[in-house]
Image (cartoon, rainbow, N blue to C red; front, top):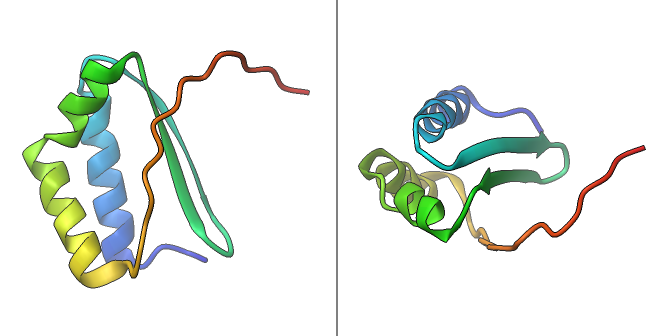
Length: 84
């Protein structure tokens, strides 16, 4: 599932905006059968700052009105990570 041009532009704009916020740690995204994006933040204060960014609020509104039938948000603490 490749992003439509307007989705891709919005994604890139939101990524650039997020990277400017103190507490941003990174992002992972996959677009196959479903789309998923996971962003990583230092703490809940940074998450709240991101959630309340005006440009992000506008992108969320467009997503709800134009692009998505549903979505979910999870806020979780990563206790450990390792890879093979």
